[in-house]
Image (cartoon, rainbow, N blue to C red; front, side, top):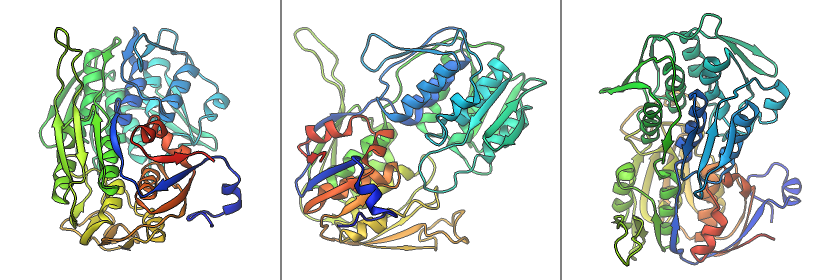
Length: 464
């Protein structure tokens, strides 16, 4: 069987990066999520700004963390494991320049390096950023980042190997409005403005829970940051920052992914660590399509009782699922990273479900693989939702209509990106028969120890 989505099936087939999935059985059991991928890596970068060590807890063992850890080490930050499982300690006492060749080893492996710009300009007066990687879900231009850095007074020189930045006159506060509430650009402004001279006002900022948690980290370090209404953030620059001690919010993307897996496989999964407050929009949709959940609060230790960590239990209650219509959006809307796993469950819902993707223009490519497994999904260039978006008059297929229920059957699949990869995995678990999922190591970018978690949930998977 030819792996679906491969341009060179032979090359892919010869790799060991494949997971054999024996589908058709419900996932049952309990797993735990650690700190949010979209916060942890940014908090690691923030440690560069301090003049004393920082401690970060509940850090997941994922590839993005290893990339940032490697980049910090190249720049003289000593990163060590703490006493607690998942604890990292950062000592920025000897920040130094790294060679272009050393940094280029990480070229294309992650998009996090762009966030090193502000901290390195503050600490060293210059920075080099290699070619950026990340998932192929749209161009995700760094123009917002570079424009913001120039507003602060940075000089950006583009070369074939990457970007060289300097700040000959230092960095100064500015007034800046984002044309779109980009999470990455908001993080860039925060990490740069906290030590820029003067006051920075950022309008149309992203306000995702991970952004607020990053602000909490920076505030612990001595930053002065005000979050106003209407997406306005005001940062008063300070001359120095110190280290932090922080336990990040749990990963709401991973929690929702396991919830979708429970729904698609007609299973029952408890996600320890998941928090209701950050998942309200997802929980509303989950319930509206027929899923059930229960929030289990943390019980503190008492005499003779070790206590219990809280979370959320997700399950399929039986019967039919219901079609729905949803649009992805920036927070507090329905998160774009939630739609791909949920769409697999929507293939099992009766009726026509409509998904309008407004954040990334090329995030529906994974539906072709689902169709090869028996799903009935049509994608359109039109905005199939109540809100016209940035892609409505451009040539991007960013809306989907899912007709269900569909009986999924096994197939050989090639993972194109992180979230689509987990969706392919969910589809393989829900399908009858044995699937082979190629490129599965890409899932390690954002899901810690997912194969062990699958085993804990009773999934029948194996490496060939």
